[in-house]
Image (cartoon, rainbow, N blue to C red; front, side, top):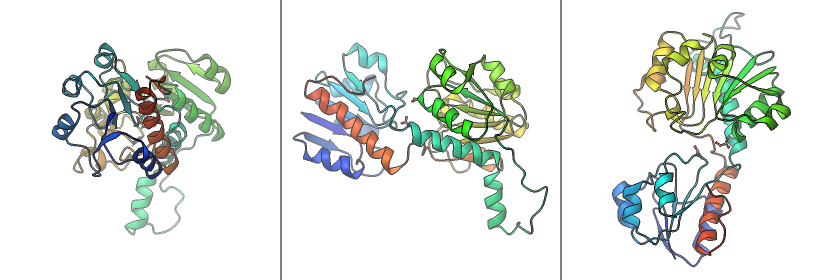
Length: 319
Ligand code: GLV
Ligand code: GLV
């Protein structure tokens, strides 16, 4: 069986991969496999192990050929896969749910706290000699106790964020999404809300939904205008859920209190981008799942998906 792996994997999974009796084609440089290289290497493979930076579309599937059996992505998001095209060709699809829930929820809390407590300004002030003394009215942020959290997309990650924030004293949790989550309503006391009501009433708003045609550009200027001007807004899902130029305008116009982003458009975001210039906007380089434990687990789950399919077994983490 011929398997294409588009990057070097975390050490244990890389070792395990090399122990398999596979015809392995692997891109081992620490940069994305160039598209040309990908299109050339994919010809005749039975399986593709990809990352969220590899676009798996019709062109690539045509280049691969009819023996392709499985595409497995080392990510929970799969907006880079052309699902309809893969289904039409009977190619199985795998992803890595659950294992990154804690890491991503942790980073979401980190961004909410950092934005709310003005960490970027604080670090800059300390490093640049603006820390003159303890001042009663200096660098005042907001806290969670008694406040309302709004979660867009109350899936596994959204629920893990809500659960963590309850421990920080959040008293009300609103959520909006495609479907009601009755179990979560009971477990964490989340209330289903319209998108507008969530925007209007939440002190903290976080996006935990997948990027789909329904969520694409959901946060536009109109949405930001409906938020409390003090609201803290965080996105750890996909940049495409936010209309980024509108976010810049909303920050310029003071429509949103503070912002934390782990995802943006494009990635990487060019260093001269306006978003970096706001003292109340923090940008991280898409590191939601970046813990040693989680990345190793993601890689091994993605590899398990491939090994199962090429050995004629059911895919363990299928889409
Ligand atoms: C990361 O963004 C993922 O989808 O796993
Ligand atoms: C996926 O996006 C999840 O919430 O686990």
